[in-house]
Image (cartoon, rainbow, N blue to C red):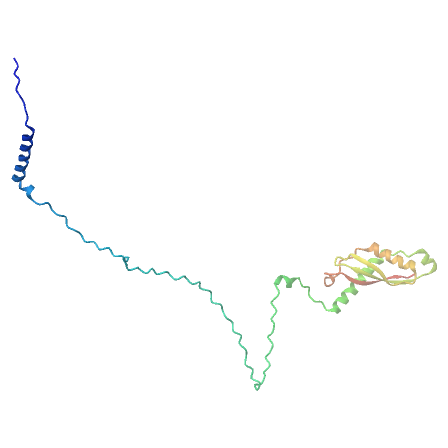
Length: 214
């Protein structure tokens, strides 16, 4: 069989008990009686002027100057002429010709005296006259009429003895004899080589061609 226990709470009484408990606790605990720490006031002064700090001076490097090359200054020295001094003639410097190379010297022909050249030409002329005389044929008309004479032929000869040109220096006064002389020269050429002192260039020689009836 169940029993019902009556349960009734007096609210005002309960509130008073709660307050009493809190008071006891506050009185019994000394930490709660200590006053709270008051925060210290900090004094901060704000200056309206800006803070000036020493500014370090930055040195700007000087620009490197371009070194210009030193120009050589030539000074013209004007000689001082003493009008009272006696002028001494200075000998002109002699020009020394450079020696010619050995090869060039060897190519220069030796200078032959004119007399020796003349003798060589006369001797060569006799040689040509004998060579031409071998081809002489007396024209029949000249034989019949008794025409005689000597033709002087002017021959231009090269260094090998070949005939360059021929002309009649002196006529025999008969055309037929002159023509025969030219034909003889044509048949006899080329001639023997000339002497050494006549070589190196062309030269002229006079050759007599005689026509005589025997």
